[in-house]
Length: 289
Image (tube, rainbow, N blue to C red; front, side, top):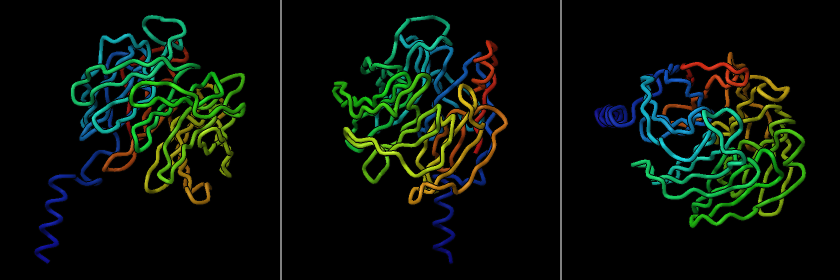
């Protein structure tokens, strides 16, 4: 019994508990409007559609600038990979400045925020994931291709398929499945695809229009949907990764964009992009478990 209590005390001391962390994190930063989020050792990292930055956000809601003063106009998806932070960026008309046609992947030192390289990626880079070897895979919402970026920065098409594209927004969120393949979602029609090199296969999952962020968790694949530019629902759906059927679905009060897995559970980001697309700005955003 004493051993069990000692182990429990150590776990609480070093990792905390889900019960001891807030379910709702309210944050404020001037017109930040984050679209992407990642978790890194005790705090969140969030992107910014307006400023093209990356900020740290504590569980207390405190926001601190981390990566600033770069060429990036707007920042989107984030991915922590060991000692690196991968950031997709581009110009979709929401930034404080404009660099028409900008689309790429920024690679930064996670500890310091120092830029290691900027890589041009075609077709409107939006989200990014990595495989166990450190290769990055980037979706381009304005094209039909998933791009591979190796650790040296070389960009090659990994898979190309007309079903990934479309007249509006195409493939968007992307995750690495530990079983050895990619899963990506089509934003406009909500189709989920299994992707290996030069092969795209539709998964037997329900259509989830507005599929934006995808997050792999022990509970299943978390699919964050919104109605920002598609006839979808503002919701968070968890899919069983064996059957690809719905395990749970929860409506969301605002338009969420993605989620981050943490030691305390999965937090969903609401960066108030719904206001930004209407030409309004706000200093408030939130993360909810």
